[in-house]
Image 1 (cartoon, rainbow, N blue to C red):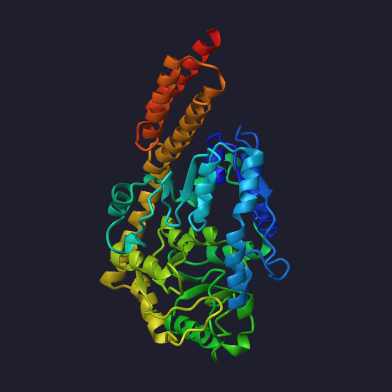
Image 2 (cartoon, rainbow, N blue to C red; image 1 turned 90 degrees about the vertical axis):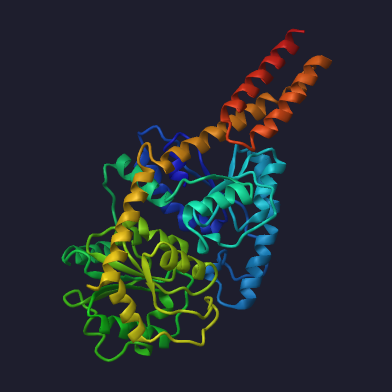
Length: 458
């Protein structure tokens, strides 16, 4: 999102904690390198101290916790973050703040500093300035996407700018700025070269993100499912899954070879590049929202939700958008919990065939995935809905800032009649920020400036 805004001339600062800053710094550096010479402002990283709540050194993210006690400590740390966040706002006076919807206190804190607050919804809805306390959990599971948006606008009274898929738009901008040239890690190049040798839409990509935890019995069934499917595969495993002797079934090791059917990729995989490769025909996913955005690559999904919003995301994908097939997951399990059920390899193979096979359902799913890819790309092209909404959002933030500063002329001595006019302008401006009338903000700003000049002359 920062890269996308920077490409439109907005100076962006990412505020995070020290350990998380180290994690994202290389990506931010790449974005800055790619946009050098284009006139885009540099993206900065600022940090606030992570609250001392008794977590092990270096643990500043839920992805790194390993016990229920540490989860509770992480939540306590989040509760303590408003103080350093408020201090940052007071010291740096940003013009606007885009905050994660998980930090419900951040929008209110920004408003207290006179900063227009925006929240980045995890389902790629961006809304600004909401004071409604009414909430509807994951309405996308109940009705189509356009109605989802309308629900936010009419029922919740929130203003919405549809600016996603953000990653797709930002990558498009950065590739254009850098001429499409970029370096990858050796392991990434290895798996991409392997994909280059495979036929189109022939490879199953399997990745369950950084927070999902699988028991050895579950991993064994994944491997059995891949054996049964007969498909080539690229399987990303995390550190805790590296002891293959605990889960690898007989005969599977022979398949895991660049010259055979599959590759096991250990560590952080270049997921965007993999999903956009023509050889990839489907994606087995835990339905985390970043993975759901694989639809912008036109790849159908085999869904295997684990916890949190992932089950709602699966409903969106399978029941509403109809671009995936589920493996039948119904039990909740977080990173620190084992689930009671184990999905069989037979069910996994059946789901894979449901999106990659020759049946009518599989063909329809692939067709819908390709249609959604086209819509995603059209949305971020110049003149597309997301492209225009990004600029509209930036323009309205600018209008807010101009008017907010102009209306701050109360520091200048003014007559009673001018004060009445200024008060009326302030009231009108407050109303204007709750509607879609951006020109009104400009008019009010001009009026306030005129009032200030008249007062100075008097």
